[in-house]
Image 1 (spheres, rainbow, N blue to C red):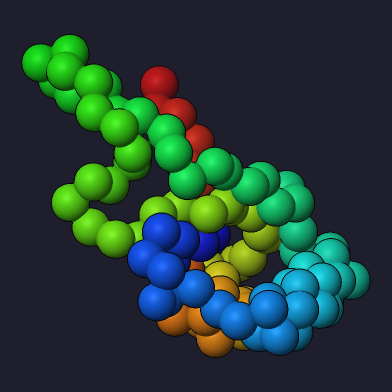
Image 2: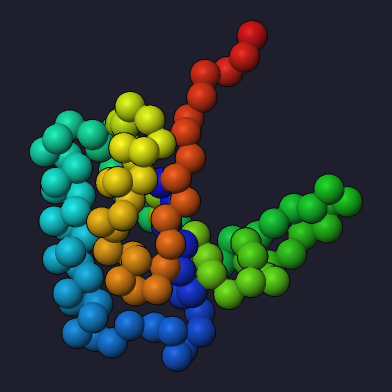
Length: 111
């Protein structure tokens, strides 16, 4: 699960009260996933800066200069299928802050 939201636009930032509520909501959400033994890798936070190296070797600042949202972090969960993973993602606190969760499946390398 990859967490995205607008981390740079001042108007899109949560209030201090919303942030405080969000921290507790994140702790509860992670705790619930871990209690079910579905948290395979805990939160890996990412900075909002980053750089992108393009195919022509040009380097640009920021992961998504053309859009406002950035990746804030990711976790890996154990789920039987996309439906189960989406069900877990639907309770993610980032949704309350206007963000989104991208659900992807890790696959075995072909060979």
